[in-house]
Image (cartoon, rainbow, N blue to C red; front, side, top):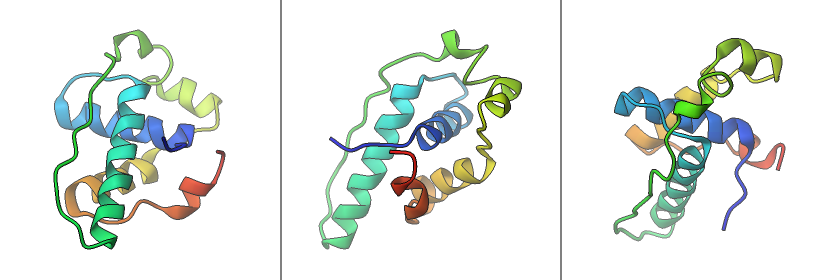
Length: 105
C-alpha cells in the first residue's frame, strides 16, 4: 500500500477522464498513481513486466466537486501542472514529482 496525496489522486482522475472520455472517481486516480509508482520502481530495478490497475469507481457523482473547477479552486487545488506530470509519467515514463509525493501525506 502506498499513500498518495489528494491533489495527485485528483490530477490522475482528471488525466484518466481526459484520456478515456468518461468520468472516473478519486479511487481510480489513486490506483493509477500506485501503478505509475510501481512502474517507476520496476524500471529503476531493471525489471520489466505488466501492471494492472482497476478503474474502481465512476465519477458521475463528483460533477459538483472533483470535476467542478470552482470547487477545486475553493479547496486550494490547482491541478494543471499535476495533470501534466501524470500525463508525462503515464505516456513517456517520466518520474512523478517527488515534491508532491512527499507533501500532504
